Amino acid sequence: MATVTTSHKACTVNPLKMSQPIGAALAFMGLNHCMPTLHGSQGCTSFGLVLFVRHFREMIPMQTTAMNEVTTILGGMDNIEQTIMNIWERAKPDVIGLASTGLTETKGDDVDAYLKLIYKKHPEIADLKVIYVSTPDYQGAFQDGWSKAVVRIVQEFATPCTVKQLDRVNVLPGSHLTPGDLYEIREIIESFGLSPVFIPDVSGSLDGHIPEDFTPTTLGGTTLEQLRTMGAARATIAIGEQMHSAAIELEMKTGVPSTVFDRLTGLEANDKLMQHLSALSGKPVPQKYRRQRSQLQDAMLDAHFFTGGTRIAIGAEPDLLFSLGSMLADMGCEIAAAVTTTHSPILEKLPAEEVLIGDLEDLEARAKDCDLLITHSHGRQMAARLDIPFLRYGVPTFDRLGAAHKVTVGYRGTMEFVFELGNTFLADEHEVTPATWTNSSEASSCVSGGSCNSCQGTTDADHPQVAFS
Image (cartoon, helix red, strand yellow):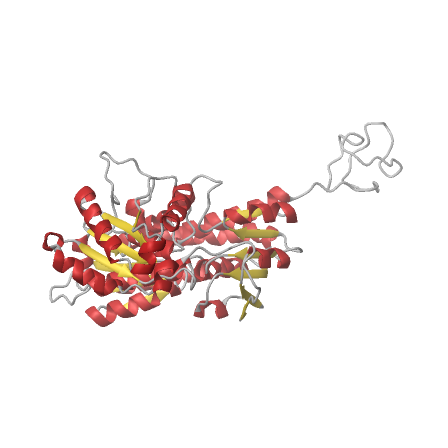
């Protein structure tokens, strides 16, 4: 079990974490026909917009209330009102997801009161749902913003339903799951004859498809009808500790029983998922996944020769850190350095001696003797300075293609991670050239005509017919 400590430096030197507001904005992007909006200055939204565009390489719908010095002091109601009305007139969204920033939180805007006055003043937007979530960026981190946004979505839409859909399953995915992960989870659940509804569903809106028509809002994701019928589900599956509060909120409001899986990367973790889905559906685990389980076991056997005993440095959000870190431990790796962004109960379960809540500078200081670095793209300079291999995981990943389609869940996704891990060490191996040659019964004779026990050649050119061992 890990000891969780916090860095007490005077400032963050090389940031690891992303802020709460953009975590909430990403959650709102998983709702269909939604316009994520940040209540703050234009710079706050511009930063998040650029980050998401570089990571997903897609059009990202985001708006801002464009607060300035004067409106910040006087209060932001006029800006919020003007923003909502402009969005309504131009985009006609079903939902506006409004997330606060450090600027407006410091001022202390009473946004809930503002919204009541705006609805009263503009009856024409009565059907427009504006969901406000408090996400000051001087507290918490990316996954905290996502978690808070999902809790607010559940609070706004979840109601008890008398008519149940026996095949429906609510799925509350954490922010560490990619659209590719959600596709894999959907396929697994559907193979048991169940119908999953993801809340939110970024696989519908950020999976990299080309739409037939342009829309200024999100295209794809969880619909209003699906949100309003959460209470009709048979069960709820939450993935990641960050979704624990949303799962409890949904169960309290609807009575739908919930189960939280702290990770879906790894053999044991997926065994538990399969057993749970089999119990829910009353059906045996499909042969397809029995085969994939066997393939994963074989992959772990193949790869452990290259991963066992290696020292890993990893920096990520808590749930991603736990998911990948636990799998690394399963492969015989030592987590020599673990740095994360925010507090979470899951951190104490990580198979490492210490987890530090800090920045990339802290990670670099602890990674000097490590064999591999795992973090998002902002760690690339660190990897170059340390001269160690580098795997990119997390948001943002902007210097590689396909970040949205990377899969690390399920037996198949775990196997892909195992292969990527093993191949990274294989690619980094250096050819070992022996200093001298000694007599060997398996060695062929030297091309120079002499015997190897008397020749002192040290290169392939000296011994083209002799294989290195």
